[in-house]
Length: 255
Image (cartoon, rainbow, N blue to C red; front, top):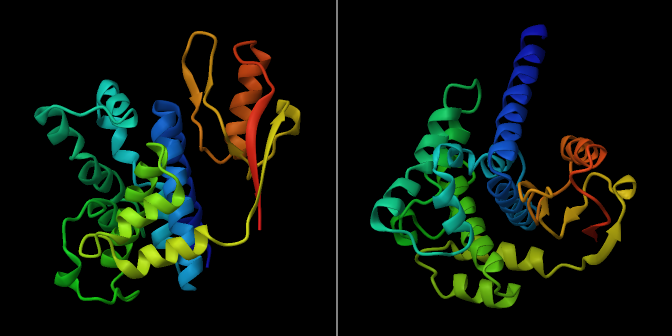
């Protein structure tokens, strides 16, 4: 029992360390990973799946390989600027790099494999019409594939309906059952409230609706990031040092 508790604490600590590193090195990628996780959570909830921690962690850690990609390439990707052939080849290595960072952490072997295959080019007819939860790597990789494609369209300025329509128009590339699950979740009855609040009024679970940069232009937290206690502590320290100032625009989502 003590060994299992120690293993769980080690796993949690390792995951927290990796996400903290990503949030410090590249807030944009950390924000992207957080959005991808929300999209994956939406699909999982719509499908009513159980034992989903592999998929949730894979989504949260899907962009960890970005820490090895040059900043200028990440900025071009975030701004939808076309990459050169050489840049595209380098950027395409991030899933495999991320997988290598994860595969030696106890109990994350499956998560590492899912991360490695997030851009898998397998056409749907090659794996059958039905994705089985028993094959966690295949299901997980296609969950990420749908979530990433959807997020790219949303961040490029498309609305939800248009983004989902584009995914539905490519049923051999994006698993129809997963796209439908995403559409069902996105269309659920959610109340969205946009607020401008001082730092003291922010709390975990709110979603940032603006980029927060220092006066020198350094990105601290990117738009779309769900606020957590570590992020709030970072903002408190930055405001205390007079490098950022509120109020801050956030989205509060209620079911």
